[in-house]
Length: 249
Image (spheres, rainbow, N blue to C red):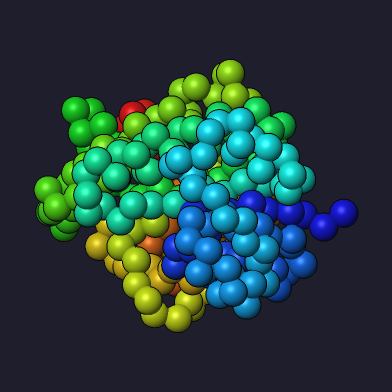
């Protein structure tokens, strides 16, 4: 049976690349979108759009949507864009946490969270590999989009600490700053520096690779632009348990 993936937040740029990549690899892809005007563009990428608001739909409705797709994997790739603080909390924190609950309730095990690099409890010691450039970038990002980073932290913390009751096979993918450049198929993954950007197309490819590699289950994997082919970079990070979120939430 062909694998079936449901992408929550399907109209986002990473999600669109993901739809195209998965459908070209033989996956059935469903894409949850809020705006009915986006249906044809999702279809052109090989996805089947489902028009439903992740924020406003009831838990029961979302659970039944997931069940109706017979998804084998759910990917959370929604985001409010970090502009309006209230909407950021509603999407990047509340809707993210609810999506974990409804995925578990729908009986789907595999769950991929698209998060962000440097999401961490800053009361705890910083990662020991950070250099001055990393510290500087960390300060700037938290200063500029602190509500977004706090919302992501709350969601990722819930995913990790409350998995006893949910029982999900989760992976968190944490890219650095995103570019519109064409993907190059190479990244650095694991314990990396923050300043290198990564293309959205390559982030989607990292998500695909995490779905394929079961060793990534239970891990958060950071990714930035780099020189290592994506499959190899992900395998190496998983094998060596290079989890930059561990102990920092």
